[in-house]
Length: 170
Image 1 (cartoon, rainbow, N blue to C red):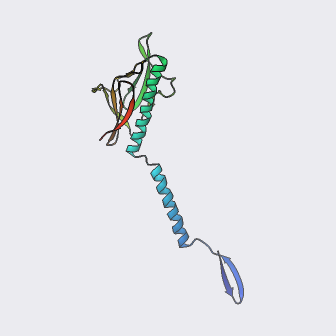
Image 2 (tube, rainbow, N blue to C red; image 1 turned 45 degrees about the vertical axis):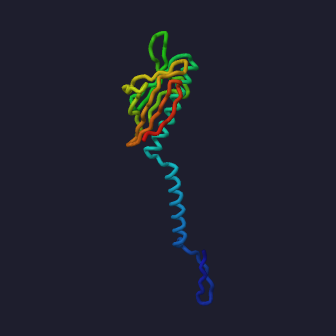
Image 3 (cartoon, rainbow, N blue to C red; image 1 turned 90 degrees about the vertical axis):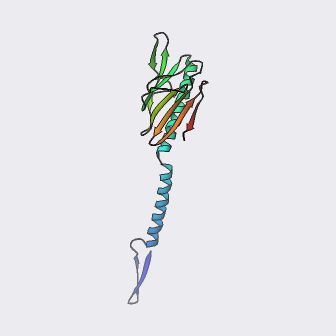
């Protein structure tokens, strides 16, 4: 902006320095709106982190079931509460071998702040670390895995046909 000054009949032009109060308020309002949108998009609350972990794990459990059918060998899942591993049955040696070459059914770690708190198979509580087995026919024992984050929890349930679903807990 230029201000016009008249000094003794001579016109002088000079550049205004700084911003007006209105310009500063508008810039702050735009920044506040943008920050609000970003905070909504990046909300990593316990509930959102828990839901995302449940979706990831349920997808990997379905992949393990599919892997068992594809390979014609039993595939198992186990977890210590934070990390989880998938296993392949080696029938010749009668042992479980860590599954490392499957695309989706690979070992991993639950998101920070999320843990596997309970494992139930056919309605009975089982200790963490025990293997949950998917047979090569695609069948499995009915199971429920409970994930927790803070005070919230969510269940991943599987039925005898190997179908896996996420259930919100009250």
